Length: 193
Image (cartoon, rainbow, N blue to C red; front, top):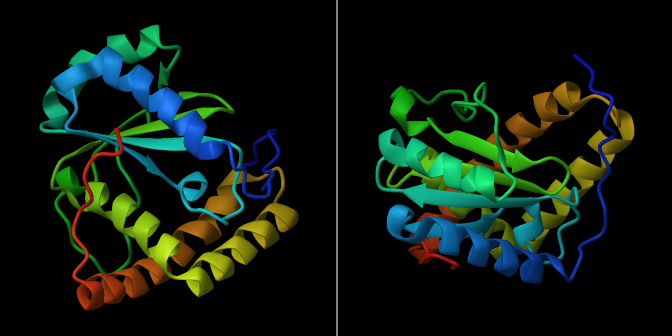
């Protein structure tokens, strides 16, 4: 199904880290200890990586079952819950319990995506490992950038087609990221805020 909103990949913006810090402060002030981590994730968190001009933030919570308590606080910050988004993509070849992919998702359209994931789950780790891998390995970052540019060029108004290719590319990248993590003894980073 095509969407009418165009997919536009922009050059890296040096203001993305500062924008994240502002959002992270708002989230921390609103949610306090309800969240154990606030991380800048996604393409805007990787220096030198072109991206859609939309920040991605991961909120890590101890228990996703109680995360709904904080959703009203997020609504007060202008974030809208997307109740139909309840899980992340399952990479082919993996068998995971549904809880390892479960999430809540809120957003300010065109500005901010907030992914709420449970501490210690596959999807919580995945977002941070992918970010750190792309930060550390410029060749992977640059190849991913080219894929994103070409997908946006070929499917500028079709988000479904864009993600139908982008998700399997991420599956390929995570295989390299796992090898990099083992070689470098990578561990989950502390909260960014």
